[in-house]
Image (cartoon, rainbow, N blue to C red; front, side, top):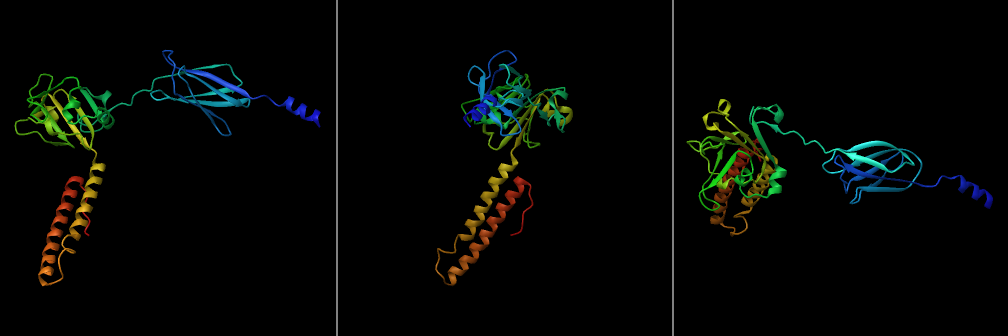
Length: 288
C-alpha cells in the first residue's frame, strides 16, 4: 500500500505558478491592475504590486484565458499556457469616449463632426471641481473670460473671444434666459441639479439669432433628480395641509366653520404644489 501511494504521488503533476508583469505602452509599471485567470472551473484573481508584477500559485497545467483590467486602460484578454515563462503584458490607454453635442446643430452630433470649437462639462467634472457658481467652471474654458464687478455675489459677466457681454446666448434646458439687450448675470447661477454644460465658441447667429454672435452656452438640468425632490416636497405639503387645523381646535360650531375654511385653503395650497410640480417636471397631474 505504501508503494502504491508513493507511485500515485510521483505520477501527480506538481502545482504550477504563473507570474508576469503589466506595463503601459511607455514601459512604466501599472500597479493595482486586476489579473483574472479564467478556466472551466472557478477563476483565480490577483492584483499587480507597485512594480506591476503579479503571481498566481497552485495552478494545474493546462490552457487558460488571462484577462487584465486597470482604470484608464483598455482591458486585455489573452490565452496562456501553464506552465509558462514570466509574462510581459502591455496595456494601451483607453480611448476617451467622444462628446456628443446638441447645442450646435440642435441634434445629437459627435464633436468630431462639428466645425466649431465646443467644450462639454459633465456632472462628474462639476462634482470634482466642487464649484459653487457656474461661472467658476467657465473660467477654465479656453476663449472665455469671466469678470466680476465686486466680491462674490456681485454682477458677473462672461466674455467670449473678445466679444461683448451681450454677444453670448445662455440656454437653460433649451430656453433662452438672457436679459433684454443680451446680457446675463452669472453671479447666482448655481450647479445644483445641473447634469451637463455645453459651450460652443464662435458665431451661432444663423441658428439662434443675434444674441449668439460670439458663443452659446447651454445648461442642462438633471430632471429626474429635480422631479424626485419636487415629488417629495409636494407629498409633504399635501400631508401637512391635511393635518393643519384638525386637532388644535375644540369641537363646536365655530371650530367646524374654521375647519371648513381651513380645508378649503389647504386644498388651494395643495393645488399650487401640484401646479409647480407640473410646471417644473412636465408630468401630468393625477387627480387625488
